[in-house]
Amino acid sequence: MDASHSELEAIRRILADLMARVYRIERELRIRTESAAEPSTVEPTQPSPAKPVVDEVTSANSAPPVLPPPRIPPIATTPFKTEIDSDLESRIGSHWLNRIGIAAVLIGISYFLKYAFDNNWIGPAGRVTIGLLAGIAVVVWSERFRAKGYKAFSYSLKAVGIGTLYLSVWAAFQVYSLIPSGPAFVMMLAVTSATAAMAWAQDAQLLAAFALTGGFSTPLLLSTGQNREVALFSYVILLDLATLFLVMFKPWRRLLVMSFAGTLLLYIGWYSSFYSRNQLGLTLTFATLFFAIFAIAPLVTLQPEGEAPLLASIPAVLAFANAGVYFLQAYVVIEEVDKTDMAWFALALAAVYIFLSRQVHIRRITPGASQILHFLHLAVALGFITVAIPIRLNAHWITIGWFVEAGILLWVADRIKSELLNVFALAALALGVVRLLLIDNFTTTQLIFNMRMATYTVAVIVLGAVAWYAARRTDEPGRTVAAVAVVALNALALIALSHEVADYYGRQITALMPARGHWTPADRNDWRGIEIERGFSYSALWMAYGAMLMVVGFLRRSAFVRWQALLLIAATIVKVFLYDVSQLDRGYRIVSFIVLGALLLAISFVYQRDWLQLSARRNKEGASSST
Image (cartoon, rainbow, N blue to C red; front, side, top):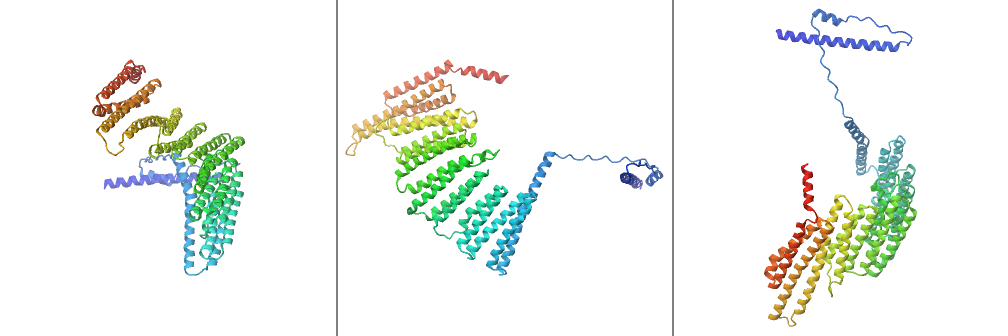
């Protein structure tokens, strides 16, 4: 009982204190309100403090005052977290909910219309009319939001309205057959033109993208499955010219990528379905017109200020892609007729790109972009000259063409500091190496001075250039490329020399082949002697090449080259001890071991003399690490 009584007393004291605080707060608020309501000239009188009723209760109980509970400090919020939360909240509210809401409304309307259509409440003409009116209404309604500053929401509504118009015309033609193809095409063209006009008037690149999407979708939506090459490609040229006009006066270069992709997809679709050889002239004419439009585009586009690097590279990428696509288009249709004509065509394209590179250099649209475009057009021109040679010829000339193309691209990439062209150069180099090792089948009639050695020499020179350019860079990718290029260079050089050794002794074996198809004991002895000489020659070649690499490594003070020499010499040691000992005659065996031993002693002497000061370098590194 005493414990419960004391708890009740404590609760009563707390309640009395709380009531006193509430009374003081109400009185203070009332005083502030009255002072704010009185004129400023009247001095506010401070009322005499009245003794609250609660105080009487407190004094009557004669209890000691109770201290108020400590205030809990507010938790400080991190400004960065608040900013992230507000950005996420704003994006969710303004973008995601907007799009989800539009999708929900469209789904609801589509369910309603489907229900109405299934119950034949609305006929085909009424359905199309509802779609057209709804599309126009949504576009008009979106203007109210744009006027109030809600551009993103306005463009979303416009996308819905424009898409509804295209689908309504498509349904009128393809589904319900209410109108023929001619009026349907005119209606879709009107929608595309109106969208482009809105994009121009409102300076909205997004609306121009809507117009292009609808424009290139029109042939697909109105397709009848018939071959109408002239109508299709004339319309595509009209779209490409409209895009070119827009990018001449608006900094909307991304539209060129859309237009190029749309043109290419429609061309591929038509070619795979309808092309025949009797259409060669007309098809090549349209392909040339497409090429001309996109070849001019990088020279006349308007570059926006502060453009991102990725977007700034659009003209260069477009120029490169346009050249490749046009050449492949022509190659597919011309190569079937005459391969010689295709070689002349490549040379003509080279002349065109030399002219374009000159025009870019003269116009100087922007300093950096003009230099990149100038060298890129020049690289493409040199590439076409290179490609013309293997097309006119064949076999190893194609491999040489890949290597020369890699060298040209590497030079241009170094001049304009383009990582993209570096990638293309390495890709061309890889293709050349793969073709050289796995595809080319050389038939040589003489040693050293033959086309196989010439092809390997070109490959080694280009790899040397790659290693030199890459070694000038200080980053990790540059060092990696340089190392791989040096290893590939030495491997190809050693393979080329080994081929010559194999051919030299292979001809001797061929000369020993018996005319009547059976071997005599003397023939077998001669054949064995040739095989022994060939095995010894391989060992001698590898030791000599390893010694040469070691000398180069010492002169260039390159540990990487010296390690390659050591590995090659180690492989030669393994061959001498495992193969030469058992296969070679005594004389060759003696010479092989003496030469190998002399080489190893010479290398060991160089290391012991410490001509490279390796020990001093190690001591210096050890002292620095200990400190």
